[in-house]
Length: 233
Image 1 (spheres, one colour):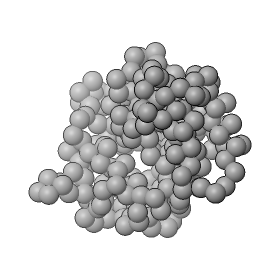
Image 2 (tube, helix red, strand yellow; image 1 turned 180 degrees about the vertical axis):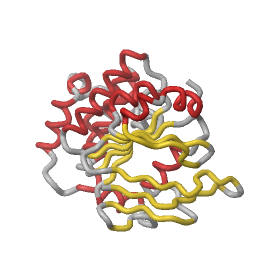
Image 3 (cartoon, one colour; image 1 turned 90 degrees about the horizontal axis):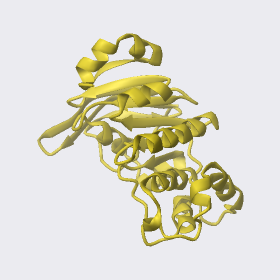
């Protein structure tokens, strides 16, 4: 579904990603693990076109998307849930969700809106409330729902657990798993390695902008000492 090959991204003199190669199979949930500054968020921003790559390639279903505008990448089927949620606090829940479907303007969104509301009952009950009135967990669900309104083939999710209580984090990840089971491919960046390993089919570890470890979930579960060494957990 998604293939990143020898990707390099620089911020001035700083090399944020170095020869990163990642494959994400259709219908899977893949996790990118690593400490702060490892390059995890930069990877998602490069995929969604927010930052440009100095070299390497990004392909969706075999077609290159690197160099395209963020809006065009959304149109091609990639939606991004940013770190910090990025909801519009002075807009209602419904308005936030409809913004997610901006690239589909002019089409009937009623059915898709209803599906998102059904998937996230906590925000469905607050349809007319402003974004700032929602709890952290509800805002995270709203951010995921907004991305789903774009009808993505691939959902990019950045640090969903940030600032949330452990019980809420589990609820949010359960929703992410539900998204995957609905047929949407998911690539998630996460510092909470133990939680990610419960849901991901395949995992990569980034350190100093490079992939230092990868493998299926069961391999990570067997190699706890190695994982601890790389992640410091």
